[in-house]
Image: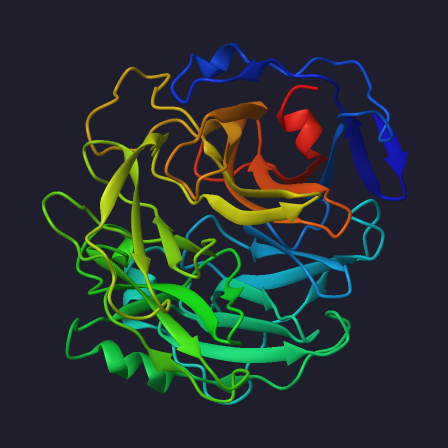
Length: 414
């Protein structure tokens, strides 16, 4: 353990390589020997948000990470004063200008002036009556250097801000909730959420943000649910609602938190959390990121413990890959693993695909212990950054949000 200001840094060495998508990943542990960054493969971890570091917050959750056009790394999360999704929540952001090695202090980046009436479902599902729930932050790092931030208020209003100085300062929030009325005819939602994790920009300049919608009549006020996208073709000046991409059916149960990626042929793929009995991730594609979604299919190689996942394109050094992260585990310590139920969030694993997600032949464990939500990004130097929750117990969120920093050689076990 090394001390770096007020932030702890853990150094880890070579981990056992897992080549089979469904191998016994719990056996793939991380060795303790330090590995210098200049070696062929390197791997380090650093805690960016730790429970107890700020008495105002009881929990840090929903990690997200992007790299801007200038190479600045932005990492963010929900800082919760209670455990509930309907808690009093702020959105905190940290910045790194040295490839993710050192970080600025956390800054709050979401606030809304004017009337802020509580969602009728909030108190019924454990939220304090006087809370402000700023939830589901999504950032997009545009090629022109603009960084877009979308966030929700109380799961029923959505706002947009932007930064032209890599997250140092932000424009005033602009409400874009009316765009969600475009879904009303197809789905009479009462609860909405963006992302979470990051959105994407297509070569055309189109901004694509996955969203999920719920009637709020089921568990937690978040079920049943469907998945769609909102898009902008004018640098976020206006937004449009896409088509419903994945509906809730007996086969595709409660699709929700979703991440998007552009494939090599320009097609947009969504990778979708769900609660289906087969316990596999759902995938659907669209030619434009908004319409013409293919019938959703299960990806047999990507197990689904029911947890948010990370997905990003890796284009560096002649390599063109997709990288996917999630807690690859379908067991429960209490032995109550029933179809369509939550599994212990542990064994965070990164997988790589060289054929746009048709196969995932390469896998390596990032954290074999309790590990939760994750997001993944790639820096101009080719460094892979996985920002994830971890802790002492495999609950829905952990004790800290940790940045794992490594390269492709480490993923390959070299």
